[in-house]
Length: 136
Image (cartoon, rainbow, N blue to C red; front, side):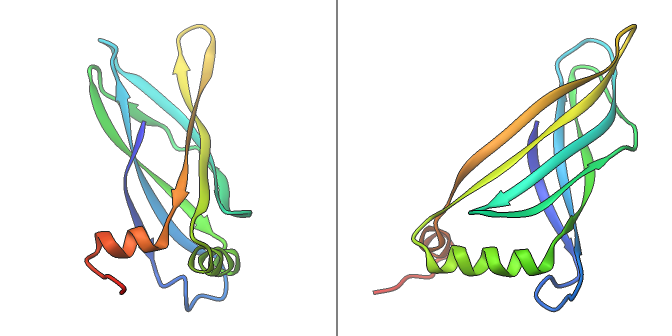
């Protein structure tokens, strides 16, 4: 599974409450039969701040021998997002972690949770360089 895109509804900088973010996750099914995703549980941390956690429980069919994009609505804690952004901008690099599990409906046994995890480092200067913005 991989993140394909992230969409933001509204402006998290102006919002007083949580802002909705939509994660588009590509779920790959290598099997010759379709699978049903019953749930997607997740948590997202930047630096020391938990930005979001929750679970989507709407079923989605994953076609055989292919990849299906699953939309996962996420409520982003706006005040924590602002703190995390300040932490990223003030540091040379900040770690991030995106964890969770996909609940797949399996015959006979019921829902089987398949974990996923993505960790890395956010380097604000590297992001600016990739966007073509440089500093002397």
